[in-house]
Length: 497
Image 1 (cartoon, rainbow, N blue to C red):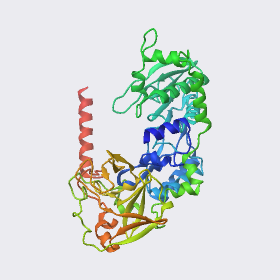
Image 2 (tube, helix red, strand yellow):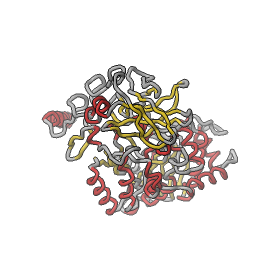
Image 3 (cartoon, rainbow, N blue to C red):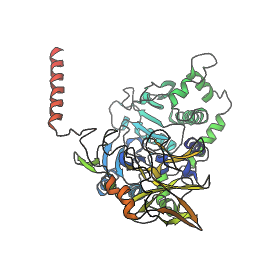
Image 4 (tube, rainbow, N blue to C red):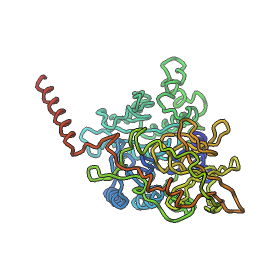
């Protein structure tokens, strides 16, 4: 599904949440934000070229303080705000948008950032205005969906402070223009980008990048970065490896597709839209971020997982290791078999988006309702994934396994059958409840609120801070001992040398 959704976005570039396309998206794209530990989300605004105004910094601080968001500078010259509840996202985006901050697409298989050094505008070694060019490049390709994420950088001189040669495409300034490098990446298997063209002007760089990115979109496999894609391209006609093939396609038009690549890229540029702003300004899209279908009440992040202080900011409590308390939750078999049940109306059919999950609140218990319009079937389960006791299942992508309808937990992709709740790839299970449609009403057969709360109530399943698992050693004697040991080792090393 996500591959199909990405292909449609790369061709048509419509709003990915419209006309049922949200059912194709995995959790992060569907939420336009990255789900983090505990089920909260991170917000990463776009900061083209790493250039940010004082007004934008102030607003980031105000928003972070207002919503209690953990703030961190990323390695790509952006600010990441962690800990937002999904229902808070449109309000956060609206506040950030008031100072011109747009979606940074940190959640999508798309251009992430174009990193830059300060270049000739400030640095005494700079030979070109690398910041302005980085801003131009980022603003041109922002929002372009591709087989995998793309990263870029512009360095203002050969000293390469922006690390352009470790990016999918990077530019290094020379006295006469820019050297263009293609097909690099960091990560698990770092790859050095290859030199494609030398001493070319900005317009020529853009022309070549339009075609390079377009060729990548059309011919790469799903979830394939530019480096492995480029490595498996054919050699040039006279040898020289895949980089020569790219020169023939992009510069010499050996395949006769340059006009098409130019048109396709221009369409994506012309149809760009800030996905956050599209939600903020439209009540129907905004309603997709409502926490519960059947009530305006919200459960805060703190009601679902304990937040603890770390150096003056809040973060979610450590997850215990698998097998420890608060993990691999298992109810008694047929826990509600002796309970008296009644059919409860939980909303109208039109309230539940097709082919995705939605959350309802019953007492203080979160339940997930899945409208599988494709099969003409409805299901209801607990919303808590039993693996780490996170209330996230309604946000998982639904599909089937050899005909068995299933949902994949968005955190670790544990897969559960929707009909009876058994785990398809393990020994955990979900509690399920029958669903029927009466007229336009969605009815769920449920025990009393008191009984359901006793088993599935959020308060009783809230993950609490534990000393097991990861340990925060900030301002701890152990931290001082480690740092003193490192200092001693460093001093000894200097003494030897």
